[in-house]
Length: 88
Image (tube, rainbow, N blue to C red):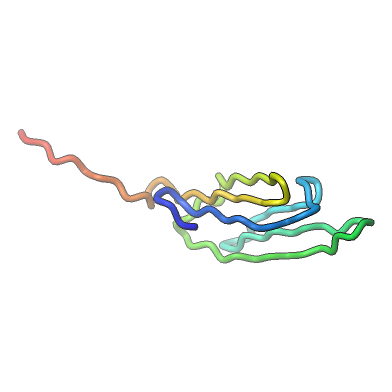
């Protein structure tokens, strides 16, 4: 989902908690890995290509009730802004 200040990505990850999920960025690739455990969970890896507008330093991630949510903001200079015209 694209919003004005970035992108929100949601994934269903039933049975996974934060200890079983690794998130990393390599270049322009966002990598989400779910680790397998001794229970019924198989591992998974998902890769997403980010554009240069995304701020990989400020990605926020949370997992609640089996849903992983990542907020990937745009870099400040990439966010459109309105310029006020002043009368002098």
